[in-house]
Image (cartoon, rainbow, N blue to C red; front, side, top):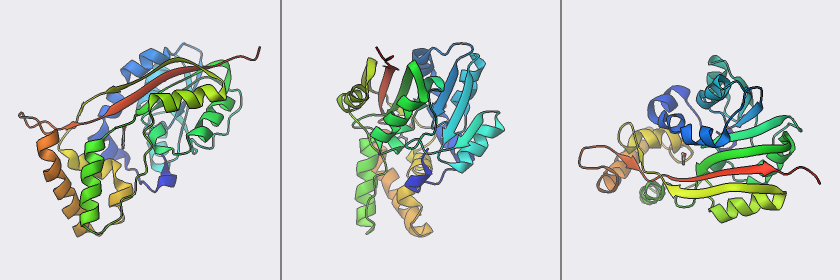
Length: 253
Ligand code: BEZ
């Protein structure tokens, strides 16, 4: 979570509208294979839900997040969490692994993230993560953009959704060995209609608006997306695309 993007985070609303983010984290934990005694950095730890699971595998976890509110929520569940921008990591040769879920797409300076992760890892350490990939939530973005434009509000895009070639290329250019990289669609069921998603994740665009304009834009986006995202049984599905990877900091020869 990156507060520099002017996206305010509310841990209670996050739990209500976006509990699926950590609930769907198991395949990534399986890819990381945390070992007892390992020291792991959770980059963009949010409310600490996955850091707690890493700790239950016997690892020692440090969480960082740019959102003060999310760090408070992570501290409250016992995570050693700190306010820090993932694009400006302050660690050296400390971690056996850096883990990140649903956070990298909030950090436009990907090269700075990768530099910081490289510095943070011990030689042979692994960088394992998942984020939104190229094409992620494109239906939501298109509807939000067109309705904001109609309301006379310029659209800001705080997200970066890379292709697997772009991310793999950047990691390899830094010296990482790419063990695995894949991009895949993951239609994701929302707990309600898309308004909860917008109120949780589209604050960069919606927070500055007057309350009446905000409500009007959200209602219009919901109606525009209903035929595309709401199935016959009334469930709403977001068009998530995930970019998942496992890379290793090669030891010097
Ligand atoms: C995601 O996890 O893919 C995501 C979350 C919020 C905004 C955009 C993408």
